[in-house]
Amino acid sequence: SVYDAVAQKELRLLKWQDSANPNCVHLHAFTDSSQLTTKWLLVKRVLHFDPPIKRRKIDVSTTGVSLAFYLPTGENDNEQPDKQYVYAYLPTRKFGFKFVVQGDWDVPANRQDIFNNNEFNLALRKAIPDLGMEALEHFKRLPSPRPERPYFWIDWWLRCLPLDNEVEDLFALPARQLRMSAMGTPCIP
Image (cartoon, rainbow, N blue to C red):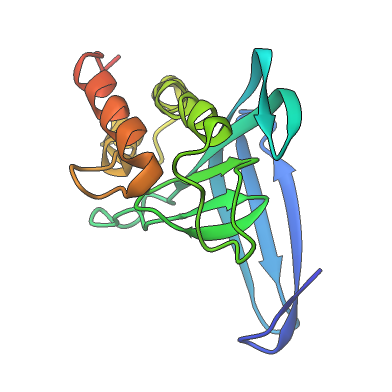
């Protein structure tokens, strides 16, 4: 459980994988008086560095990067994805992505940013465009929540793509690379 200082109540969290699709996870958050369940599509990559890369004077040869895309229920045609935090295990800040980015980023002591010109962070960010395109392949296989909209999930994935100048700092380049990859890829199966 987690204590929500703003709401001043204890929040209990449960996570479980969807048996039909192992890339989908359900998060169930509840208090004594309310509950909320959300579903997310998760793509992960383990990165191997040979030779190892220095991170805070330590050689690192393996780490991981993950992207998580919120999956709406499909009830609202006008729903747009929200900007999400970039995590270094704990949230840092929102850089403009409409999906969660999780990595072992090198961050300053206040955890409100990610170092821009750090060799380790530059190596981690290279995984984002490929993971975003891998997510598209998973979206293509998800059953539509709306039979009359067979391409519902592809439309949602396209809505999650960052537009020009939406993503800041360290992540502007991988956001642009993801958009360019999407332009050159058939999205409709």
